[in-house]
Image (cartoon, rainbow, N blue to C red; front, top):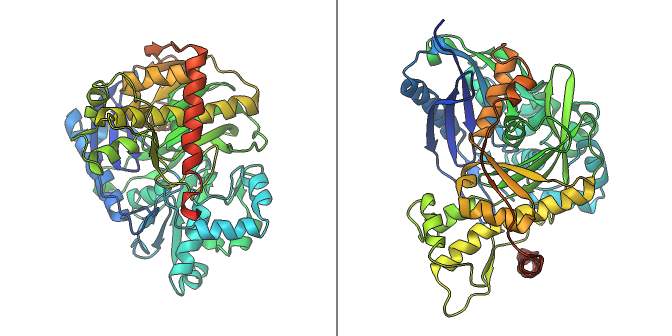
Length: 498
C-alpha cells in the first residue's frame, strides 16, 4: 500500500500553514505564507477573509507539491485556526460583509463596557466560562451588525452567515455545502452554553444576535463533509477541527487532568486539562471546551496572553531592530541581561490575569547605557513574565502544582527564552521534538475520525522530548525580578483612560 498522510491546515493570525503528517506523526512537508495585517485604528485589527482563504489554499497545494504526492494519498484533512476572529458573509455568494475582526481587536470595547455596566457579566461568566471582553466573538458580531444598516434584517432572512475562521474555511472547502463549527471554537464565542453544549438563546436575545447566522456545532473529530473536487482533483474528507490552543493541548498529548501546555505564537496561551466537567469560574481564568470525541467532552482552563511572539514582529517591523524574527536571539546575546529594562507589550490591552482592554505598552528602566540588545532581552522576557503570571494564577485556582510545563509554538525553539521561562516559573519546561503541535493536534483529531490512528493511547506514544530546561535562579533573584515586572505592568494598566 502506498504511504498515506493527514493534511493539517493551520490558519494562524499572521500566516497560513499546511503540514502533511505521516503515521509516525513525522512532518512530511510544510508550507507557510504570511498575509497582511490591517490596522484601521489604534487597537483595531482586521484581516481580509479572501486573503485568509487564498493563502490557506495556496499552502495546502504547496505542501502536497513539496511532498511529491497526489491528493489520492491524503486520508483526511484536519483544521485548526486562530480563534474568536469573526467573519460575516453572504450565504448566496460567499462574499464577506467586510473584513474579519481579529481576536486581538479592541474595537468592541465600548460594547463590553456597556454590558458590564448593565450587570450582565455574571450570566455570561456562568453560562460560557468566559469574561465579557472584546477578545471574544459575540461583541465583534454586535459591532458588525451595528455598523452596517439593514444587516440584522438580512441575518433574520437567512441571507448572512457567521463563522469563526474554521467555519469560513469549511464553507469554502466544501463548495458552500457545510456551515459548521466544532465545540472548541463555539466555546470561544461568548454565545455557547458550556453546560448544555449548545447556543444559548438568552444570550443571543440579550445581544440581539439572530440565531439564523450561527453554524451547526459538531464534535472535534468526525467527518463533516468533503472538499469540492475542483480544489484538489478529488474529494477529501474534512474530519477534524479544533481551535488552535485546544489543538495544541491535544497535540501535546495532554489527555489527563492536570497536564498543561503553553503555546508561544502571536500570543501565548496556557491551557490545563481539567477533565470531564467544566471548572468553576475563577478570577482571571477562562473555562473552555478542550475537545469532544464521540460523546466524551474534555474541558480545560485557560489563560490568554495577547502579545507573545508578536512582540518580536514589532521589533522587526516597527522598530526595525532586526531584519528577521530569527535574529532576536543573537541580538539579545549581545547583552548579559535586560539591564533593568522591562517591556510590557500591551499593544492591544492585556489578557489574563488583568483583562484590561485599555492597557497599552510601556518600556521602563531605560538608562543612558541601554542598547537594542537590552530591549531585545526585555522583549523576550516579557513573553515569559506574562506566561508566569497566568500559570501562577492557574495553579492557585486549581490547587494543582505543575512539575513540568510542555511548550510549543514558534518561539519555543528559542533556547534563551525557554531557559528564562523555566527560571521565572521555577518549573521545568519540556519542549517536544515536534513543536508543530497545533497542526499535529488537528491532524490527530482528523486521523482518529477516519481510523488513521487508533486511539489517544496510540497517539501519546508519539510524544518525544527534545530538550528540558530546569530552573537555575535563586529565590531572591526571582522575587526581585517579579516585583519589578509587576511595577512595570502597573504603569501599563488603564493607560487609554488615564
